[in-house]
Amino acid sequence: MTPLMERHAARTAVFQERLGEAGVDLAVLTDPDSIYYLGGYWGYLGMDFGRPTAMLVPRQGAPSIVTPLMESEMARRMTWLDDVVAWEDGRGDEWRGALSRRIEATGIETLGVERLKTPGQVAEYLADAHADLPFADISPILGEMRMVKSAEEIAEMRQAGAVAVAMTEAAEAAIGVGVPEYEVALAVIAGGTRKAAEILEAEGWTGDEAPFHCPTIYNLQILQSGHHTCMVHRRSTVRRIAAGEPVYLCYCGIANFKQFKLGFDRQYFVGHAPEEMARHYEITLAAQKAALDAIRPGVPAEEPHFAAADVYRQAGLAPGYRTGRAIGYSFLEAPEIKEGDTTPLAAGMTFAVDGGITLPGRFGTRVGDSIVVTEDGFDYLTPYPKELRVLG
Image (cartoon, rainbow, N blue to C red; front, side):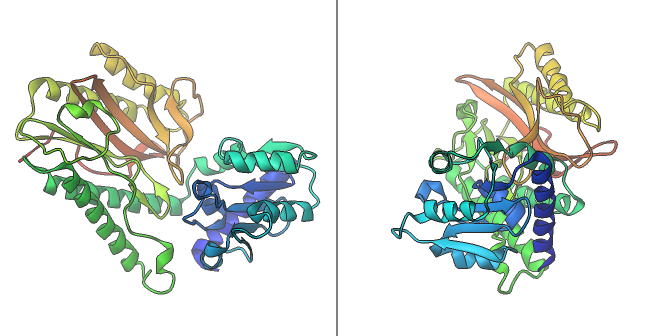
């Protein structure tokens, strides 16, 4: 096995131990992030195409992957598992039969699933076909395992941060009066892809294994300009940027590298910054800074949110629902920086921490970074300037 495969295998061994402690005989995982975390495999297909992949992990013995035939060769090359079961469209009962045969062969008494992450069709089938088995939600087991990142994981998240920084450098070079938003989005994709490829090539991923880490930046760029910045998640359009307008870019859906998903946001002004917008942007920065300053081991996860909320209230603004979210192999992990989450922060936890103000129908100001909790505070995974910037 490669060192990377050994990491996935070691995680699976820990997961099996915890299944035993929880009294779960077999876990059926269908969330792509969970399958990658343990099995090292990530495919293209899924329930959206009617073609799910599942990883079956017994409390003892060898795990297996059940995947569509057309992706089975890729799965065998990517995963450390020896047992890859291929099912074929139109043959027998397809994935249903492949899953059930594996479940029945283990002679289990308790079946574990990720309750909120298992696709409805799969969950319904398992409940009907194996109604005699008690089901257990194993999401908390995986969630706890993924809270604190290893040194290797943090190093790779720093690489993802470098990719995110390259994206915004490319965006800055493209932004200007009269430039269509989509041209900025194209620059972001190209800049991030080239940086990711540079990292992979430097590590020697240029042979047969090269396809298994993809440098290409994908998903839709969240980008708005002008008064459209009040729409937090509008994607890029053919609208042309005008002088005196804000331009906001969120990279949260596309700052993905080696399966790590970071949060990152930057905002700029073109030509000049209108006074009211500049004032709100400074409040946004102050709220994020208050949250970041409150981050250190042992602090309840909700405390940085309260610190940011105080800044908004003092400025006569309403605080948001959440100031941050744990990140890693999924866009949203545990814990969250919000009221009611009292999980103690610990060194090695990683978060996206945001500041944001929206004036409906007028404009918005936002900023966001990914960070890692350290022994005495935090460190940036996305180290890049965020003071008010005027371009052009």
